[in-house]
Amino acid sequence: MDLYPINWLTFLQGMVIAVLLTIAAMNLLLAGRRGGRSLHGHVLVAVLALAVAGTGVVELLLANARSADQYGSLLKAAHVPIGILVLVIPWVVWFLFRAGRPWLAGLANLVWSAALVFNLSQPYSRVYSEITRVERLTTIGGSEYTWVAGPGQPARWVGYAGVFLTLLFVFDSAIMLWRRGERRRSMIVVMCLGASLGIGLFHSVGVDIGAIQSPYFISLAFLIVMAGIAYELIVDAARAPVLEQRVRVQEAEVAHLSRQSMFSEMSVGIAHELSQPISGILNNAQAALSFLDRDPPELGEVREALVEIAEQDRHASDVVGGFARVLKAGERQSERLDLNEVIGEVLELARVDLERRGVEVTTDAAEAIPDVRGDRVLLSMILFNLVRNAAEAMSANKTADRRLSIGTARRDRGVEVTVSDLGPGIPAEDRERIFDPFFTTRADGSGLGLAVSRTLVEMHGGKIWCSPGPEGRGTDMYVLLPTADGRPV
Image (cartoon, rainbow, N blue to C red; front, side):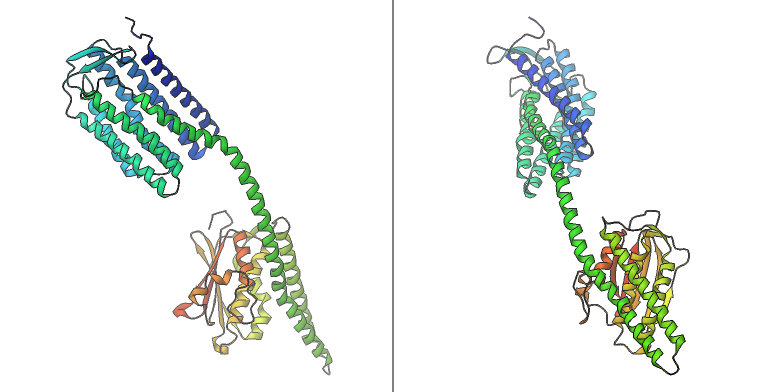
């Protein structure tokens, strides 16, 4: 009789091995074209397919073994691909479906690894302590195979426990997927992995203890799982280009809508930001006219008013230019800036208004803070808005309590600016909403200043927030900006 007789059993096993090798090759090819988690998934499935194919080869050899020693050696060697198969299954589920408990996967691997170590030390594998009976039996259809019997190893149940824990991990993963609403994937895990492991475990135990007389067909059982998982991966790979194109279209639409929204917000913001310098220009012009009407005219005061008009006009021009750069394809100037210098410029710009309101300003500028990178005009607008809001918040205070402080500090993730006032404060339930467009806590407020400020801060990669002042009095506004070397906030 030939060592490998041509019959339906050897033909079926050969076909299974060929299919599994094809699945492995396809997944290795896909792994070379895709990256990230998909790459790991394809590589693991390829390893799984190769392990099952290797198991099929050994099963083919076992079905045609001629002696106890040959059968025992082959059964011992069969635990190499079977071992890889059982060890890899939990991580295939984890990487492909992000389901399951890693500690349970680790425990299953540990128990199964102990069984594999024991297997290496035994002459007839971890299954038999001795093979006392070797027979050639015939299946339905006339195919012959080798069947053996003998006293079993007590420790073989450690291996069965490892497979059972792996099966438990698979069903636990399926339950997680079902609860997440991924029912199709849950069924794939149960019907493919769960069924294959369950059939393989039940049949192997039956053959090992002599309750079932048949050749091993673990590879045939796992052909189900390989077909199911390969189908899932190949479908995902086929859909990936379509999904990527859809994502690109959606991103373009979102960018367009975002620019429309920003344009609307910025347009209203321009009017808001221009109200202050225009009001200043009007007040100074009226003051200059009143100084000229005096007898004799107070030319010194007129000159000072004209200087203020020029300064306010420059600020208005900068505001318009800054917003125009942002609205033009999102452009803005970017340069290294010392925030202490920017704060000094802002306070000088706001000096007249602060003096008119009777606000006392103190600064606490940290020394040697790192530079930030951004648009000087836009950052000045943010700080000017915070200073003006702080001054307006204290309009009802006694003159002695109109104190504003502004300072800088170096933080682990950037440079922080703090603007503090002694106003009435902001209710806790409104501290997040004050940055929403058109929300304001003042009767005469527009609700746009902080909304625009947040937009500009986020454009610079920073954050803005507020908190109650010391002892719950007043408000502290914080702006955190990344340093010029690009450290994220």
